[in-house]
Length: 126
Image (spheres, rainbow, N blue to C red):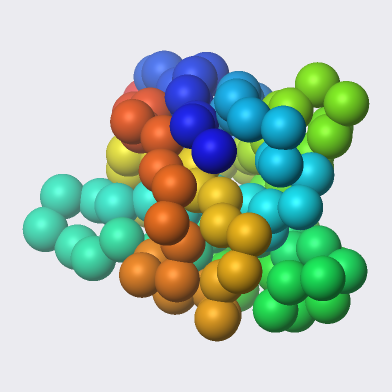
């Protein structure tokens, strides 16, 4: 699976952005997908993920505690797309956001996902 993320930009605190991730490959619907982010000087961290019925996690949706209630991950298998709707953005959400996919992740750590997009920068600032 090849991935390409888009939709980042500059937004004021409290604003919204929707990130998109276009995937290529016929097996996209079998893959767990996730959004990760990496701020300067910090490790890459999970933001949100959707597993499938046949992967680890059994068809569930996961969110980092810091984004619960503000971010929503979704996928459209017919279009090979993954989305991250981000509302009530905070300055601490500033980071490069990456989409990732894997047909057989052993967990939700960044090292569990084998396919990565190029990243899109989100800056939350007034």
